[in-house]
Amino acid sequence: MRSARPSAVASPHRRGLLLGGLAAAAGSALPAWAQGGGAGAVRIVVPFAPGGGNDVFARQLAKGLGELRRQPVVVENRPGAGGNLGTELVVRAAADGATLLLGHTGTVSINPALYPRLKFDARQDLAPVAMFASSPLVLVVPASSPAKSVADLVAMARRDPGRLDYASSGAGTGGHLTGEMFAQQAGVKLSHIPYKGTAPALADLAGAQVQLMFSVLPPALALVQGGRLRALAVTTPERLAALPDVPTVAESGVPGLAGFESTLTYGILAPRATPDAALRTLSAQILRVAAAPEFQSRLGVEGAVPLPGDAAAYAARIRRESAQWGAIVTSSGATAD
Image (cartoon, rainbow, N blue to C red; front, side, top):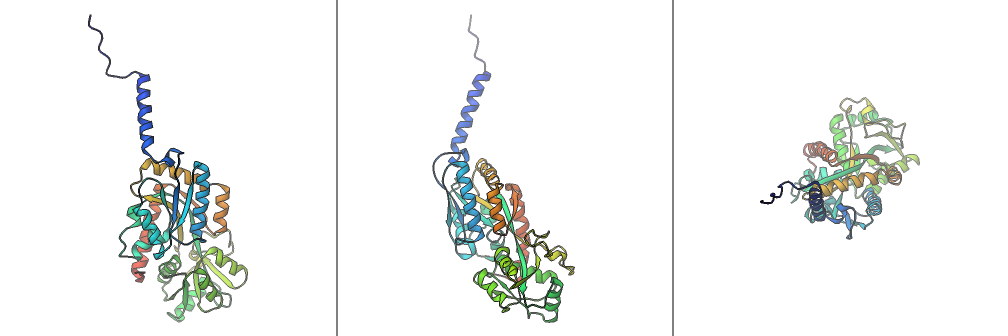
């Protein structure tokens, strides 16, 4: 009698072995960090000089991720061209999960409009991994200013169009474009005075050499608490715990400013072709690290607030901010080229 033909359907045990082998093969194709172990350092590129909020956040993330994955995670500062040098380095890097970018609203959502001759577009050439924080701005004036509120400041600007100078840490920065958006929505004309950094801008503001500024929170807060500056408003939708008595710009009652909001978002991005499985793994790891009390405390010190979000949430945020700031760049004529 002819022996029975082997079944074309594998037994449950055989199927388990086959599926296990396929999973192992798929796993081995991913970079070591996506498998939760292995050797080889991962670098987080910060497109700015050491010492600022971007650098601080990157180093906190690197510390937590290194402990979580039990392998080296290093921070590499690549400043220059408004953050474009470091951003392009990551755009051109191998999509193997070894090179990541500390993303910021300026480099990801503003620069593509501000630098029209860039040979890359961070929005198209990088894949969002996760966002973890946002940073508000505070509208400050010299302590000697007659403006006690946003409404006072707008009235002053209307009496003398173009006579009020507002400082920023540089052309094309969040503070610069927030001032442009404020002027447009309030229906006033302000004159922009760019500085090479926040510290010299705030120093001249405290000395009443300029009349107002939209500043990142920590350095301005110290001057407000020291009595050298007056905080008129914050740019967030809700008031801040650090300045509970300071209203939002939207609360000012000035026509046109009812929906005013300006915050800067921080997150991590990778080269666009990085495998989806690797991106999902890293996204979960980043959000886990960012939820730790030590990381949350550091955000507070730097004047940032938690804004956890996965890749889809971060991508949506980038699209919204790109539309918002692209319109401001176009209408104001701002350029950095």
